[in-house]
Length: 440
Ligand code: ADP
Ligand code: ASP
Ligand code: MG
Image (cartoon, rainbow, N blue to C red; front, side, top):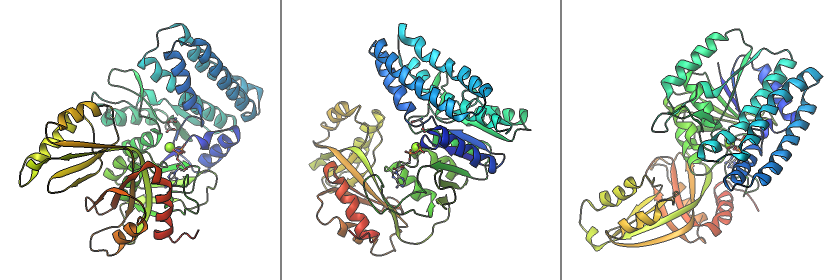
């Protein structure tokens, strides 16, 4: 059995839902994970913002617009009045629920419930559409098997047990549908796996059922060698090692959520990135095979802060780095890049929530300098150190760009540069020209 995940654009309209239904029916008995229709989760965030601000009228207006979008989709999607009515009865409950908050106190808990409505609606609509087409699909409610523990980590034994029981109880189904992104926390409250987290759902389910493969279906034919939002003439990379894909996802390649590679890698389940708009395109296969010794792709991670701690006491001293890192551990703030010299250390973080406290502590260790609004440019490939010339080529491409930090050698798969946000698009384009021979 495989797990097939379809993102927001793949189920973003009645015609797209029909196309996905056709694709999944052809592919047999698999588990289908769906995101909310594109734009819905952003709209739910907007509704939640109004409700936080006690602006019931603002929330109502946005809910009305969203409701009419769903009404139109339902009218277009189903052929028979019977299924139009069934779908509307189901979806009406979600809208009643959204409206029910306007008179109540609104907290983080209610927000999570609001955010869950998108995936609940897209999956019901798909399930009913498949039924109308005569397909015996079964809707497996993610809130009944996807749970996080007290450390906010997925509760894998629970997931495996509950999901297996549900699959066994519905053994004669043609295929299974479930919601991406949503889950319960350790206290049974509705929660989610963070924005873009449907990829993570697919990966966790894949591991729980020991799937043959996980397919992430989206709006582009696989991982491209640069970010298509900023660079023209990007091309798909056909094969990536788990480590290469993890670096790219972590450092900004939006096509994959950063959390989704680790479970696949640990369980050695291949991940395929495919295009719903062009189902026959080969896409990208991610597995444990390292192919070629070239640079494969470039990605950029925004909103980075660089911190430099300089201390003459670091000279010939031991224990200085431990003290620096302990500060970040105390404030639960992950570090991305690190560069050291004889008298100091520079590092980067992407979570600025505890920055004032961190800086106060670091100032006890030395002179601290901060550069914010920086971007990490990550160049990924088989960069094992005996392979010559790749670092040089990347650095040469950046000849005219001011570079704040460079990291290489931490893994065999990447070289990272820290630059100013204003130089990001130019840098990505220069790298495509130099590394992938894109002519301008
Ligand atoms: P979905 O809603 O299906 O999860 P996403 O929007 O999360 O889709 O991811 C797909 C998008 O990721 C693409 O449309 C593309 O703009 C963006 N993207 C960023 N970097 C890359 C890359 N290196 N390769 C392919 N797509 C990328
Ligand atoms: N619908 C959620 C979001 O927009 C989850 C996802 O699409 O992966 O973030
Ligand atoms: Mg996504």
